[in-house]
Length: 163
Image 1: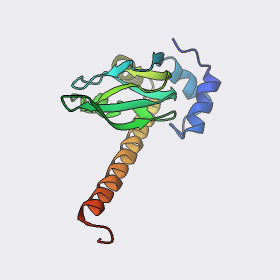
Image 2 (image 1 turned 90 degrees about the horizontal axis):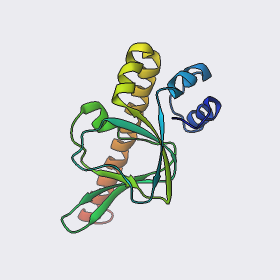
Image 3 (image 1 turned 180 degrees about the horizontal axis):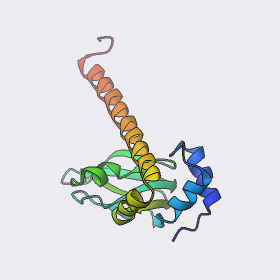
Image 4 (image 1 turned 135 degrees about the vertical axis):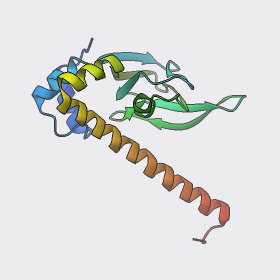
């Protein structure tokens, strides 16, 4: 069940540049397919090796992405409100490479599970296409960020001032 009103959801999407071409009526429809999740710090959203059956929008709090080196969890990244998470495994149906868990004291997510997404594709393809476009943009940001980080790492490893 979604506690958020259609107007609140529309404003959230607008403020975070999510599915920008959706109108209020579209968001009202999409609202019926989403579920609101409330998590506490440390709650696991999805574990390493799980195949993604849901994707999530972060409404409140931060989500951490970790891998285990055999001794402890190593944080690889963190995302906050306005971000889409879980889209890679959701769309490619391959096991997750990271564990996703709540980093903040309170985390609130909007979940779209596979069954609801499959219904959305058939009943409201325009909305589904907007979600896919949003996922592509999200993955683009991830790849650009990783490229930037690798470039900095290479620069650090090969010596300052070398290009």
